[in-house]
Length: 151
Image (cartoon, rainbow, N blue to C red; front, side, top):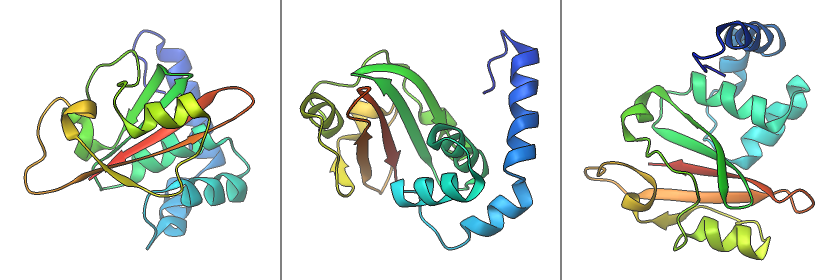
């Protein structure tokens, strides 16, 4: 969405995002919600956009530290982070093999809820005074997955 190597595409994505999911109304519709797959699904349906597009919009508007990792199988295809989480994003090409996300993707089984995870698996620095949680949902037919990391 913000790839500086393709500025025209990034501008087009920002325009489409604001046209389809106006920030003021989108923020209002998010009030009182926590980031989870129910919120992503409900908002995607309400605004008639893909879950991935909706995830980027939620991440861009939320104040909470959170990251969404998009994968094809266990290969990371993109990472979106909230402003509060930008300095924690770890550059990774694959889902760490000893995580609940890796297990979920390998077994093609959704997580029903968030589980506590080891922050060093996902983040480039420690979280002081808090636990890190992960939850993964998989599209069974395509093998693509979305993992939410939040603290």
